[in-house]
Length: 116
Image 1 (cartoon, helix red, strand yellow):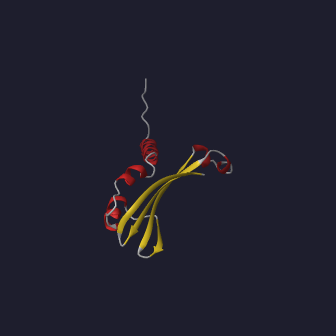
Image 2 (cartoon, rainbow, N blue to C red; image 1 turned 45 degrees about the horizontal axis):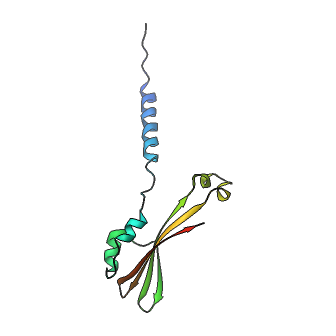
Image 3 (cartoon, rainbow, N blue to C red; image 1 turned 30 degrees about the horizontal axis):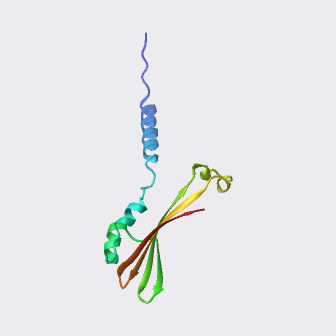
């Protein structure tokens, strides 16, 4: 009985596909805004907030030395990833964290969820 061995190119192809498959499962890093919101305390500086959460995704100047910093994550239902139909199926929600700074220090942090 003759035993056959897979070719090197087939072996390398299978290893490559396995590597790609496993790396695609990792996805984007997950953020946990409720936990992050609990780390923000009144009186912290903007620099301390940036060290904890990174730079904000949006900044709004409210005047009178007041800024609003926004961090947000959009969660989409599985069905919404389908082409053409995704907008009509399932619901999405946006988790947000608003941090209000006055004179460079945290006045208030508000965590919220909006369903769309």
